[in-house]
Image 1 (tube, rainbow, N blue to C red):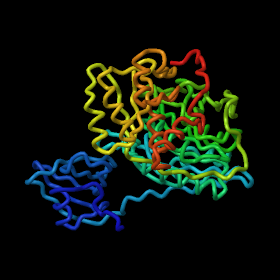
Image 2: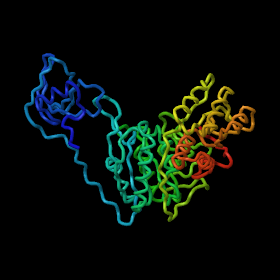
Image 3: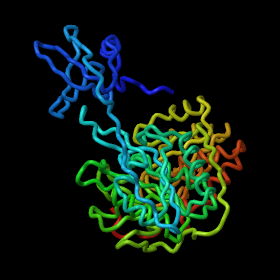
Image 4: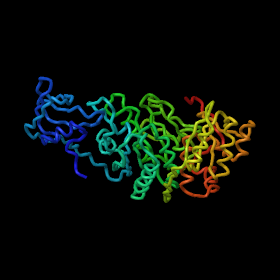
Length: 443
């Protein structure tokens, strides 16, 4: 694919620039509103509109000029094209553990676009190494970019790609793997890779940031530093999420990928364990184990099981819920539905016919709770027992996001409804706790 010579420009403005043969970096004279400006044409990092042209003036400042019919553009010279030449990274000491960093985008791999004031996904994993060159003192780090998107744009296809890339890194000898990822759907991806990569020999750690790298309060360097050390030295071999444990930089908590949820929109401690203890924390330059229930690091052969169904839906019950929503999903060919029910797993009786229809048509209906902590008990109240009688499956202490991901995974492994249901009810990677722990101090 050829490089775009007018990066970020489109519409009539792009046509005007192409007409004079302009490329990024060329010197232009622009006359508009009885004013004349001379400078180098800069790329548009994010195209919120198609009528602003960006020039770097001789003073070093950038200026944005609104394109109009009266604007006159003249190419007056070819300046040195903008090019970033990253400094060489220091080499790791021989014999250090090998850690692979896989970038998928998100705030940890973002910068502020000073043209628009917005945050854009613009950094590679190599850029992250440039931010924290001390990483080479911890591990022999390799880094590459898999995706460069915000996490809300990721789908189950990207989960499959992530799992395959991690599998390849482990097969090539990685002692641990880091995935940089946007925080908004990190919990979904962590659950997905927990099911897609089983019998792991080493840790796989999702690392993100609540603040972009160019903000003074950014948490990306601390999260990355702790993640690389933990990936290299931790005694556990599971998929986990690792971000700040509190508002300060003192510790990073590592939370099981199937038992973690983003519980705050912007705080550093946004991620909390659900019905589980953290597995470990990174504090004072070392890993401290917290949970005695974990898979230990071991010389095993990982299994790549990275197929997910796109015929699963997650539905939140609420007062005045329209039961035809379930009927519409069944009519649309869905194979599984996870219902976020109230409390111990209650929904109104108007939904019972649709649940019964789902059973008869081979559609799995799983029931979770809208409550963050605790587990469903469909045998406590009559409404719950009515759901069970109609084939609904109580999903113990799994929270809805993990249940949704697991059902997608189950139906990606088999076309047999009963086998998929058996997998759904089997504790495979710590998604079920036999007894819900009391988590004192949970936010």
